[in-house]
Image (cartoon, rainbow, N blue to C red; front, side, top):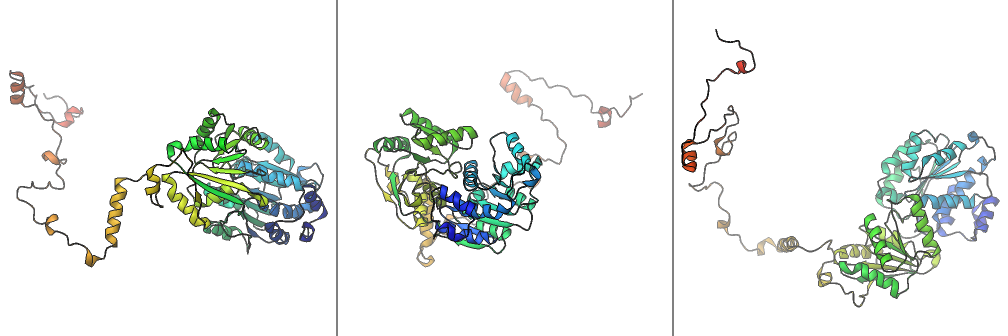
Length: 493
């Protein structure tokens, strides 16, 4: 099967041929005909299988009838809205739109945060049929009244699972409320969870489910290896692997933004060209770091799951998990950066004792056991071998007591040792010398909060004993009514 068999118009076929593609991928072969029919779609495929072109090509064909060269903004209203979770993914999708739109007169723009809004506002005022945006910045334009959705015909949610993880669901619901009810909706994601399907039920009408691969399946061309190591030796082991194996273009995943910056600085001090990419950097810094990594000026790019979600790097050979992800599905997303289009790739994971529980979850998800190779000179501590598969952190005395109680509960009640009744005294048999419990309204020391407060005077006997001389007691004047203190009573005659 080739793209001409899918019913694409000549302008799109020419753009596909110019890009060097001849045969569609499985997700493209299934999704394009259904989208051309105007039906809602739930499309699931692994990263790197061409799902972006799977919705871009039919979207452009459905909007081709609106293509015109008029300079009037009124002739170029927003017809299609594509939402992505990250800036990098938005830029990648918009590049794909431009690639296949070269022979059509449709306009497109990319809206994301981290940059000045004025340039984006100017483009929107000129008129754009296709808007690729991140939810947060798009709502900023909605508040500024620089974008109108009255004529939107197609809505696309790309990487919907990541939008859920990043907490974009409230923003997405706000955007959905602004769109026309009569529209075509497409939801694409690398994986589908039950939460994603619930979202699809609320926004799609009789959707067609397309899954070209088993959920959370990893690519067979990727080699997985685990290096057990102690936490304090992780950085040194990473530098050793990069130097000894001469790794080029290695994408390293860490858990936090601060950890990404620290690791990149450490590798640079070790003579390894490295840079970090995360949300705290400006868009220009992130773009420059990505371009340097693609061109080979930087050997190692350190990033978080969120920042690296939309990275599209051709022939990426190595993915390194400096820290295993907390969610097993994120492991599939990470290694999906390598081994694309049938090419080989390496997935290296540095695992310490605290991460053995996460490793067990990953192996259970992908249904395979990963090979563990200990690097000489970087052997893990003894705790790695003694920690259980479900271990989430360092074992403490509390864990031992908890396991003892769990083992005790597993013993049948009939076989348990009888408890000593004398170990717990009867509550009703209170010893005589035990002090009487205070009443409900009485505080310790005999203080009663219901009575007026009177300051306690110092004891003259104790003061005389301490100082060796009598302690003078200040004479108290006659007590006066409270009203007199407040100026309510006149002087006595």
